[in-house]
Length: 135
Ligand SMILES: [Zn+2]
Image (cartoon, rainbow, N blue to C red; front, side, top):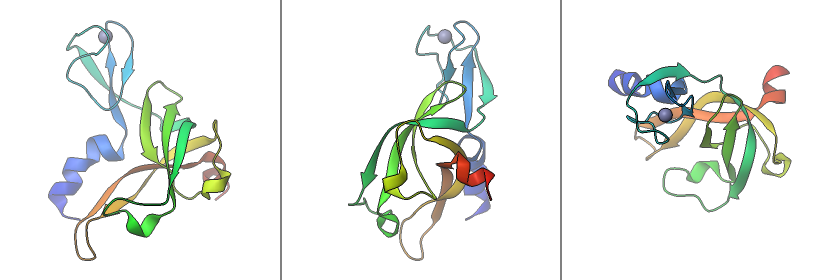
């Protein structure tokens, strides 16, 4: 990974940074320029805890380009404990063990690799919270 990419991906991808609307108290992720609720541009940067639970999920067996080495994997909607819902991949879990409401936490993992010698993209995934606290 080159430094420029690392720098570019650091703030929002590796640290789950979002926005908080000062007018209507909504928490947003990813970071919009304007609040979708009230339209203001007065949004403060906040960092989410990375803790949440699985709201919905699907197991992917037929992967898009760049994800082939990772099937089967679980794509989920994560309800963060501190507000927003975001789509993310689960990691360190057997698909059969995923249930609605499973407690998860953000971890930094390789997301995809475009080719065997191509760039590797890093970002967040979510792993079962139980697993992380027993390591
Ligand atoms: Zn607002």
